[in-house]
Amino acid sequence: MVSADYRVDYRYSNGNIHVDVSGEFNRNTAGAVLEILQTAYTGSGRIFIDTAKIQNVVECGAEYFKTAFAAIDVPTACLFFKGKKGERIGPDGSRLLLMKEREKKCCGNLTKGNDTAAVGIVCGSENGNTKSVADEIV
Image (cartoon, rainbow, N blue to C red; front, side):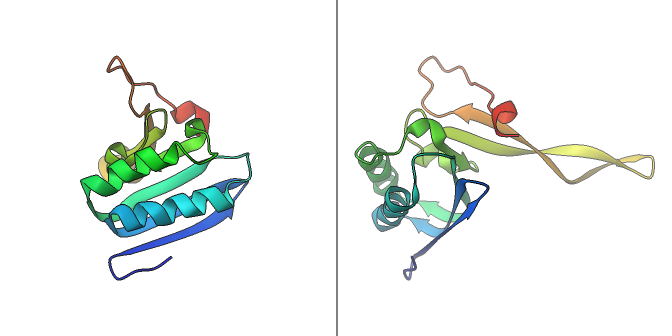
């Protein structure tokens, strides 16, 4: 789905749905993502929403997504947001995956590289504690 201010694409991979969102995340963007989730989710697998290309999260778009997500037949436990902006968008019970850069060794020297590791937390944890989900998704 494409508009002047956003773009939403998705694909299937290994039984999972991967949704790429770019541009502004507003109410229309949220509606487009929800429509994809409602029609593409088959009752199994995980859903990964990549937020790296979102330029701006409009508060009303994030709130609309959280509210309207409760009305569709997709469990929050299978919903994973990739990237920091997912923290503002994800409904309670969804998961947030953050990429953490690791140092790697090259020719005997430690260097910062593109080697990354996933660190995950559950969105909306009531007591402020975070739960690692990295082992669950590897």
